Image (cartoon, rainbow, N blue to C red; front, side, top):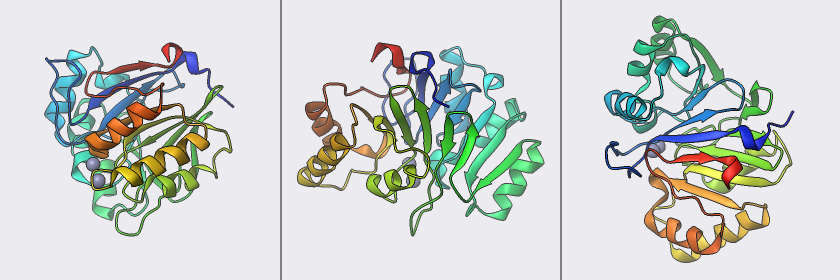
Length: 243
Ligand SMILES: [Zn+2]
Ligand SMILES: [Zn+2]
């Protein structure tokens, strides 16, 4: 099943920069997905009080959230989970199956549901997570299948963007519409980033939205190469019908 892209709203709740002055920036990433069926929080940033404060200022209640997806174990993506679960534990939390037993037990103790992810998995019609990938840091990505192509959301993309996109193929062969999240390109050269941008363009990508650990250089290269480039930062609302 494909989701009508015009219904989808993405709101960045945690990012290294703020798109609006009264919101707090911080190292980490979190993005809310609405309009895909149930409401999903992808990653929780580093600090719970910052996440909850940004949500409040944006008029989003923690109780609106049905599902939480954690991309990988680093604290700048999982740090806000306890504060969130204190506000709303009636959620299911999806995370790579390589997460520690202690983490799983902590989430269960809060009363929330847990779903360790060890293979490509459908969360709901049109929304899936990839199998975990990477040697050092195991990471999953989320994929939303829309009528205009795939939205792929990454936390830090530690295993590399290309490696993550290979895992997306087990979910859908459709073209890539949007790539949003941390792309871990801070240490990459202009040449490497330009090469990646060309590869992504060949996969049909039209709307890159690099956040968090993507680095200023990748933002500059992508902004120049893709007319559909999307500016990011805390508070940025991305309505698919507007892009
Ligand atoms: Zn990380
Ligand atoms: Zn990170």
